[in-house]
Length: 356
Image (cartoon, rainbow, N blue to C red; front, side, top):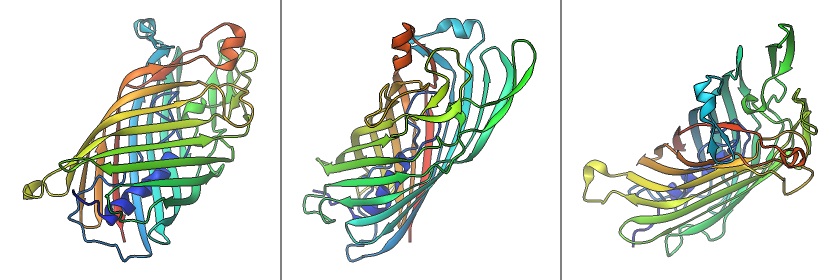
């Protein structure tokens, strides 16, 4: 059975932190995250680091998408496209993930996100542009079993604190129906942060199966105990006057396959295919769930390629939405209505990881 190298494990786990911060998503609903890379997917031709007790791994990630397809529940709102009143977001996410290995099992992790976004449409002639530093996370992670394990698999757990470092009240000029101009906060989907303290619980697991194939799973959940962010929405529905500090989640799982050693031209290349679910719940697990939010989820199929060369790893994936659902919020239920949200068809996610 093929062994999973410790360098691959260390380098890949650095991106667990990338699943912990709040940034705009694949539309107005899905988890505000980048792509967490999965450990154990790289080939074993890297130099072993089994005796290494300390080390620094740095990952730069990028994600881009354009959301414009409106859904109520899982029903696509074709009339928005016919009437040309869709709200369109274009978002570029940037991420710097840092992992400092304290021991073969324990690491310090930190994640520094950033974004640039535009929003327009919905009958408005305005185009809103926003960007800046997002909500930074710092924390620790640990393998349950000391790597490298005899069976080539392992399970890791991570806990991070989310700092309210990103601006959640960026504002611009809005032209009202009576032609008057007013300074109002941008929609929360293009705000760099949420202005709230929170914490993240994350986990991942991988295990070799047969013929250079590895099964993998990752998951993360962002807890936002604060009820609302205090930012005005200027919405008329009761209970929606302030932006909600919403929880978020991301789950991924699938299979990866490494190129055989005999294929020298493809050495270090790994392909994977899996499922991905990301979203915002209607109710938080801790604290109140007041204010305006767009709950819902996206289920995607996620093909990916990873290439490793020495201490450097490159990754690209393209989650393609298969199921989009804007679920009812607490305020929707109280008012007997059902709000909508815009989603994208796909996003492109890339990253480069370097272990020093």
